[in-house]
Length: 555
Ligand code: HEM
Image (cartoon, rainbow, N blue to C red; front, side, top):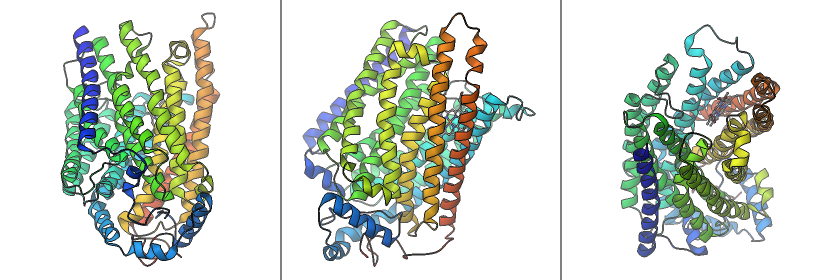
């Protein structure tokens, strides 16, 4: 065992040290400017103070612009805006937006399909926990298989593909150059989809590698690795051709995620190397890092860009955003073993991970304070911007889930909630409350630019928000309470074990209800998405192309 543990620690340490060296290198090359000016790199000349919110009509944008100008006290000058809209930089941005549309479209469309399928599988799994006789006729519909199919579809289908689609769309904008090698990404989407479809079919047929988050058999997992690698090609090619010298913080997040994920996946998936307890250690090293070093950077990178862009304001403290990124890069990779507190693993290994988990407070506070302070005083804009509404909720829940994670790593609390439904609530707070909310908001922003048309039924955006918001609140609150009661029952040696099962019953039913509302919200979202793709519905203000007659907030 010590060999694998040593190798893993060495690898984690290596990733942190590599991060440190890249940090020093980036400093010396001047790629990482600090100070308020550096935060303005995402705006064209004269664009500061101008809202960009393609998910609403021109009239809605004018209202948003007025509310934002009132909140910030800066007068909005519509005349100068028209000059900006005619500028060469704007013309260039139109070309840049067009360069990534096919790649972004391929990923985002796939992610929608996986979101719907994954949610339905989650709902079936949830119902089975309170009605065990539900759908018992076929082996492929048993809890173990449906639950696992749900997990893989939402992680690798919905979350990863949405994150990649948004990242591929943002990168050329951030690097101020058209996306290079977009066809590699499109091919990557095809290979990734094929790998995932085959993986889910394998899981449902009973063929898995048997490790949480790594269930897809490695023979099929190779396709995911190839698909992911193909997506890395445009990143490298576009980075080489970039016109932006200074790299905005979102580029650091997205670029690192695209490098970290393949390392994690390949190390954890290599067959016939890890056995027994070592395998559990590798498993949790991967499963935790896939959240923190893959999905979290994609989500935070998007939040840092879209919050600033919608408000037309640079983020509150650019320096703090860099502290947040580098602290994540240096502290996160050794935190995963806190999932094995109390297990047959060396104590010192657990201690290292608990310390790292507590250290995570540094990046979390840096990100949280920064994003909340950017929006502070401008809460009225949330009413008018769907993108901001979803993303700000996601950013708040990021702070919450991260602080909750640190608490859960502390042994006294871990004893209570380990092996309970509380963990499932925590997982959904992270992947749903934080990550998925940010992705929903980002997709509302990006799709009108990708298709150059409006969302056809604006009311459906509100319906989506409230269905998933209420559904998720029910899911999270009830499951957390049920989980704590379950933990109390399990720790009480005088009570029979079955008490810990029956006590969760009503809370699991509430989860199914909350999950049904979330799934309904996803169906509404998917209907709206495909209605837009098929060009259904009314047209209100024409093309939402940048630089068109009424380009931004102008009436
Ligand atoms: C985008 C949406 C969703 C994401 C990202 C997501 C993510 C996850 C994750 C990460 C897990 C593993 C939790 C763990 O073992 O610690 C999980 C399990 C589960 N999810 Fe979801 N989920 C989503 C939507 C839903 C919905 C709509 C339902 C409907 C009720 C649902 C029901 C379940 C159930 C029943 C489990 C298994 C819990 C257990 O093993 O006891 N999920 N999900």
